Amino acid sequence: MPRPRQPGRHRRPEPLVAPEGAPALVLAVPGAPSAGTRGLAEEVVSIARSELPGLDARIGYLDGDDAEFPSLKSVLARAAEERTARFEQAVAAGLDVKEPDGPVAVVVPLLAGPDNSLLRRIRQAVMDSRAAADLTDVLGPHPLLAEALHVRLSEAGLARADRARLFTVATAADGIILASVGGDDAVQAAGITGMLLAARLAVPVMAAALDDDGAITSIAEQLRASGSQQLALAPYLIGPEVDQALLAAAAEEAGCSVAESLGAYPAIGKLALAKYTTALGIAPAQAQSMPSH
Image 1: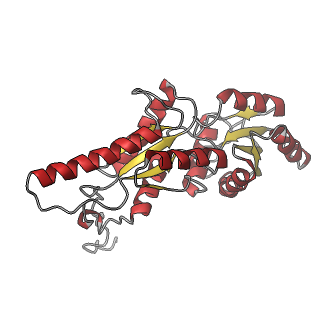
Image 2 (image 1 turned 180 degrees about the vertical axis):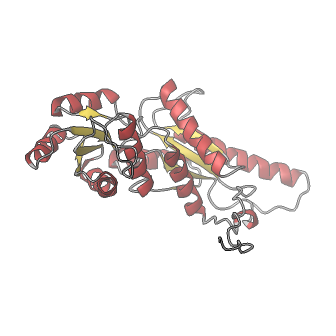
């Protein structure tokens, strides 16, 4: 007989809600702005908003320069202007309000791994905006990114969707190359997520820099020398940060199949939000009691 359920043991936690006056989450999007990039970024912030109702989430493009694709600098400057305007309106209305302090925004780079050249540009845009903004780390390495890579490989028919299932995919890869951009730091970070992916798939996974000429092919040769024959290239990339033609060319040169980039996989929005809430120190129990600015 099943034991009677003990009251309160499995109650759902109180939903987290963005505190009134909380800083904006500004997603810093690298790469050339395009309709595809905008759709991806909008989907990521939509996921974040669904996880945290009331969230003020905005998109700033590293290479943006107009109303359609606003630059990160202009988005931050606008957020600062709006907060100052709200304070001045409150004072004019005779309300007893404190002058706002703390960050006006938390900037989250839309990057799976570290890319120092892009991060320098994001940092410079934050400084140029003259807005009080915090900049978080990149999204990875993280177990959720290993899950996302697994899903993208299974969607391409290059991995089983679930290790527990008995059937196998005929085209499943027996060696995975994680393609990153950003040099040695990016390769090391990708390697950490790669270990998690290797544990999920039970096949060897090695990381290589897409922007290091010949690195993908070199890793492919190493994997083949160790016994892997059917290789797959898994982009440890969200998408906008690199020209997709580079991926296709690297895969062709290395003689391996290629999966889609991570894109707007739900984990990306959740990780962006986690960077935001961690930067602000928001926890479910204190979300609604955080002082507003």
